[in-house]
Image 1 (cartoon, rainbow, N blue to C red):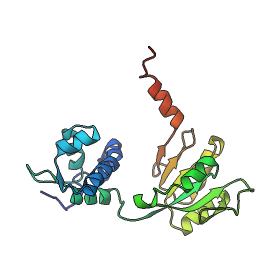
Image 2: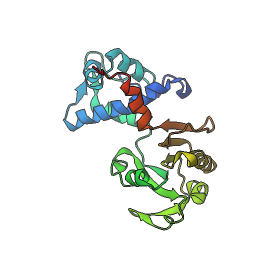
Image 3: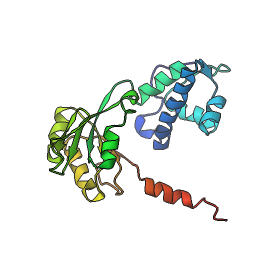
Image 4: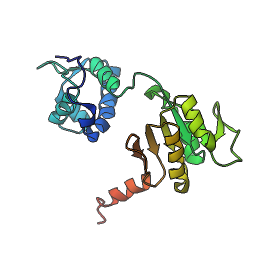
Length: 216
């Protein structure tokens, strides 16, 4: 059965690791929908995702009841339900700070808009870059960050600055009302509890994998 009454557990009580898995469920379900697969069991989803069927059922149980006993999940309805939980049923404007090679690659990445995100404003502290354009966006001075975020109702920020400027950039985002930061700088940011931070550090990821490499 489907329970349309909403989450069965208060949002603050849902483990963060569960929230992190939900986008993987969305991606997997969308691939099934693209192949015209109308239903899937938790076992089938588990095999595709690499978790257990029990884990999938447990994760979904935080948000209500989905599917029918013996018939699995309606893939279209489930992807819509999880997208709604993640608030992916709208476009989110994003502020990007740091227009070096990494920042420009992020600004030009074409995968944001289909995934509910749009780079709406770009900033840099290098005076030589101010006024230049990236795509259709003019590079603004980083000092304009708080005002622009408030005026444009931007609640998500991406930091692609050198690490020496990352905390200062985060502080400016906080002044602008940021609620979520994706941080590419190799530094742990100090932000209020109301701000969610995700770090992306390729070097640390590689360092964590070399532990498992057989040197023989």
